Image 1 (cartoon, each protein chain N blue to C red):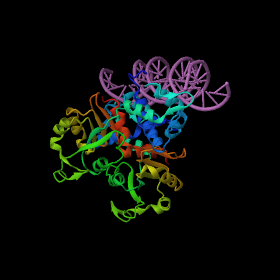
Image 2: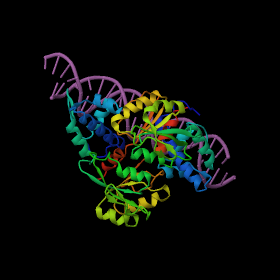
Image 3: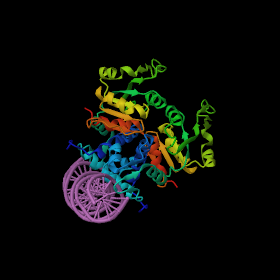
Image 4: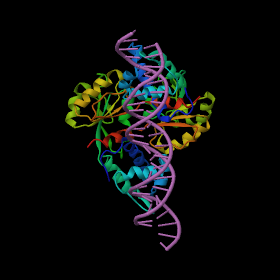
Length: 206
Length: 206
DNA sequence: TAGATTGTTAATCGATTAACAATC
DNA sequence: TAGATTGTTAATCGATTAACAATC
């Protein structure tokens, strides 16, 4: 149960396990094995057992893993045994889609605030909330204690906005802008860029 | 110039290099070094040189890399020295956002078709094209010779739709549905799941 | 009990880094 | 030329896999 300094590559697989377990639970199954889970996620059984063993002993020899228990423990480990309020910054097409995305329910997140700098958009409602003025971005984020932001602004201003967010106390940024954000080491960034995803495939397609 | 069997981990970095180079080119710079590029993308200079050396010798000792040339070569390697017609399947919020995304221009892709199964949506225009009936999915895709699809349907039908697409000749799927698609080995899949991105960050946030 | 599956160890495999001769 | 930077080699580092005793 050596919880200190788990390699990043292992942490990044845990949400994938959790998602598959929740799908299994939804179908009414209550027990699984590293073998079965491995087939669902495309990862070897040995690796799954090794990954989980970083955090404790969650299974039983002979029978495998009790799904509700493993879901509970993985949720705790990933800190999604709570609901995080997240903000969407930049309400273009992507911002709208992200704000209205219903895939966050039951996975630990709730969109609590939306921002845009365009006067034509400010005040309009998206998911029950009016779009806020980006002028008050730092203050509103800080007051609400929001730690996680989905950044959907144009690339040209993304770094500037990110800097402001970090100053306001944000420590996790899901970045939809097509550039690498430079951030202090205590801030986490995950990048989502569909064009990069596509180019990773075209390499293999003649 | 050993082009055969380049490790996947290297291929997956090339689009990141290409994106950074295009940004540099846009600012009017014409030359860079592995050192400078490394700072932009957060990867060591040695690794960048090693990665590129898999495909040829693109730099000059003492001066570094000529950006337009490296962009040209990387585009060829990734097969984005052309425009790929891609289809969006599933026109919910995400499908709409993806179809209207203007970040594909100059990166090798063009949204050429949209599909949905909902009669209320079929025929409505998105980016100049009417939404097509998903009933004709396989046939339309095959006729148009489309090889790449962005899959934005609900998780419950994603695997079924993917199977149909593959039968119709699709060999790359950018999957927005929150589950792992099981596909034949010659088909490439890239997964985009914002909740997984968020959970990879909350682990580090107390 | 017998069969199944875990958690863990040791062995293998692959990726990253450091260093430097080559050379622009 | 002198300084800079590449492409590449060898060394290091880390991740994955295979195997198996422990045990449910």
